[in-house]
Image (cartoon, rainbow, N blue to C red; front, top):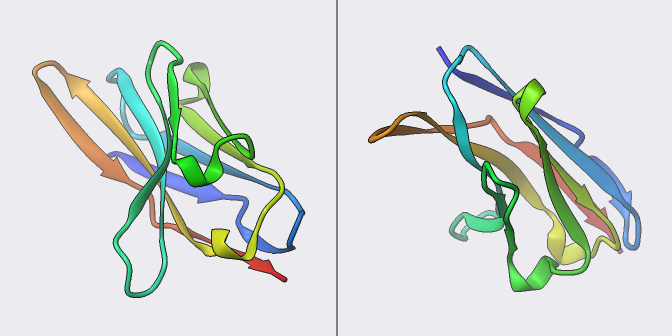
Amino acid sequence: QVQLVESGGGLVQAGGSLRLSCQASGTTRTIYDMAWHRQTPGKQRELVAGITLGGSTNYADSVKGRFTISRDNAKNSVYLQMNSLKPEDTAVYYCEIKSGVPPVIYDYWGQGTQVTVSS
């Protein structure tokens, strides 16, 4: 059974930094896309950043220039370096991976980690 374990969330002042980590276990299959999403109460979950197996990245406009997504394929891990944090970045952050054997690819999600940015 595939499990994603996230860590690194917490409370930080505006302008500060946090680094989120997510490690996948229980799979020997290739992990293709990896991503971080976030959600606040009453709002839909939104994509923050994504990274492909080849290393191509994409970011939400609201985090471009401040957040950096990276991955370590040997460790089945994805990271999100968050700098210059703003109170509006406060949310529960979830990692997501797509893994399997094409054409059958499954989505897996972490349990979420809270990030709170105080003003």
